[in-house]
Structure formats: structure tokens, C-alpha cells
Length: 86
Picture 1 (cartoon, rainbow, N blue to C red):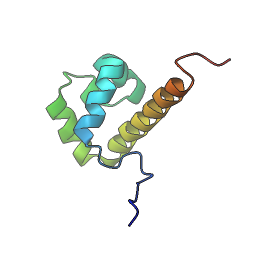
Picture 2 (picture 1 turned 180 degrees about the horizontal axis):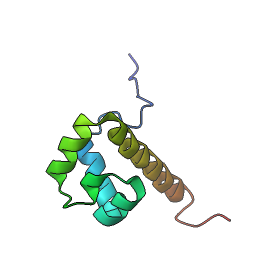
Picture 3 (picture 1 turned 30 degrees about the horizontal axis):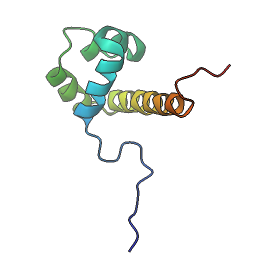
Picture 4 (picture 1 turned 90 degrees about the horizontal axis):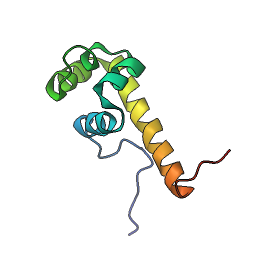
């Protein structure tokens, strides 16, 4: 049998993994400015962010979309060997 590989970019990625990745890339301050989600601006913590995003579908979608775009950009950059294409 052949193994099925999911094309879903969020397959097997937890919400905690997503937030950790984005905070490592951008930091809480920039993340709060870009998403305009209060849990990233006012006293941001992993636990408060997880709690809010699990209860708020529109905010979770926004964060997941930013994760997908950021991951894709990193992968594209790696394919180009880290060089910018003009």
C-alpha cells in the first residue's frame, strides 16, 4: 500500500506549535500589530492566546493563515538558496 501524504498545511500541527512558530519569527509585538488580536497585545502569554484562539474561530483562522503564508515564504526562500529574486 502506498502512504497517503496530506496536502493540508495544518495537518499534524497543533495550535501551540503555530503560536510558538509565529512568536519565534515575529515576536508578540509584531504579531499583535499584524493580526490586531488583543491576546497578542495586552500581556500576551501562550496560555491566554491558546484559550482565546480556541474559543474564537475568526481569530484562529487569521493566525492559521499567517502561519501558512509564513511557512510557505520560508520554504520558497530555502528553495532559492536564501537568495532574493527580483
